[in-house]
Length: 87
Image (spheres, rainbow, N blue to C red):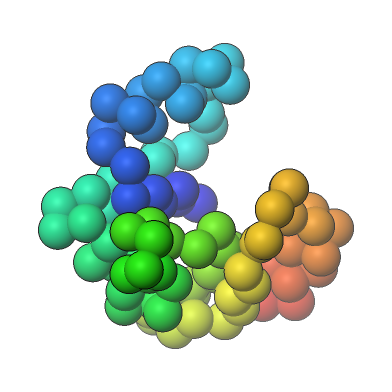
């Protein structure tokens, strides 16, 4: 599992520290800003940021699931069902 954000590495460090650490890598899509988000159709050029989303990509690089998360936490039970169905 990886996290990805258009924020800088320094911002990620502060975010992880605020949460008491993360058990997964948090990657920066900072420069060129949003390049990865654009490839997944999540970049919001009008706002200069990406949509919050969960994207599950298999080992072959095929997107198996994606959901935009408007606010709040994602539905963890739904994500577990999706991941288990892919196994």
